[in-house]
Image (cartoon, rainbow, N blue to C red):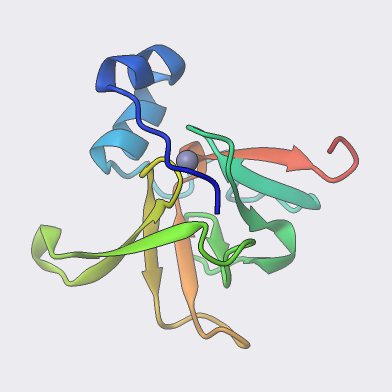
Length: 134
Ligand SMILES: [Zn+2]
């Protein structure tokens, strides 16, 4: 696995938009059904908006009806870190980019086969590279 990336909040602020910074560095959540990747059906790969690590592939994307892009598996094993999140009165599993610690969203255990998992991810945390452009 590639080495960790560390930047100060100021460095991230200079690189990201205000909304990208809020979601990825302050564990924010974009409004459901608002993200640019939610209705996205093109073939390609989804990378971390902060450090460009490959996180998800369109081949594991599905419509969970929840308002955020959903995937049933990560593209590269070990590319995503899981953390227990007890905020907002719920016990959830937060997922972050393993390389730069960007908050991505949460993973739930009600996804489709074969994984049975559902990664619920903020669009603004992702940068899409279409297959024909890669
Ligand atoms: Zn990252």
